[in-house]
Image (cartoon, rainbow, N blue to C red; front, side, top):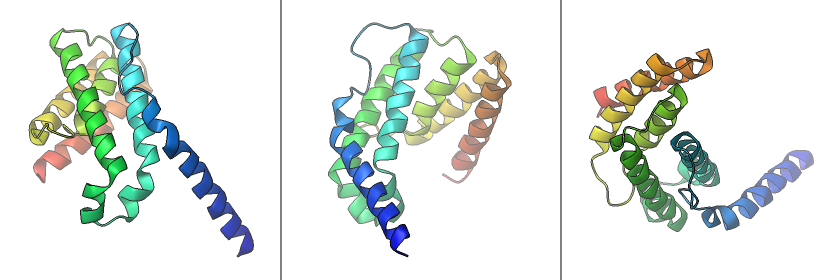
Length: 159
């Protein structure tokens, strides 16, 4: 029992330390990168943001969740990321299976703060994952795209 409490305390301390600094990393890169590298960066910051608020997502009531400053900040960062990915997509700079996967993942999270077309974003995510399956050279990317395309389809069907 005492070991379990110590492990829990260590996890809480580590999570708290990460929460203090996760907003210091820009949601989109500040320097010029290839579109593939930029999409990879955007995907990684998206996932890092989500890890920082995971406990709030799992254990907060919807009312508390929607008012939480860190959740609001992640939502605002989601909007920044999605706007940039939309721009990359509009410029036809999605090329590889990984590009389509990373872009689809950002669309899958919806519009965030101030962007309310979540159903359309989900439909676009599904299309991007399907295109990613076609373009992917690695089987692992094809499988990821397939799984998330199916997940997007289920969410759309239940929307």
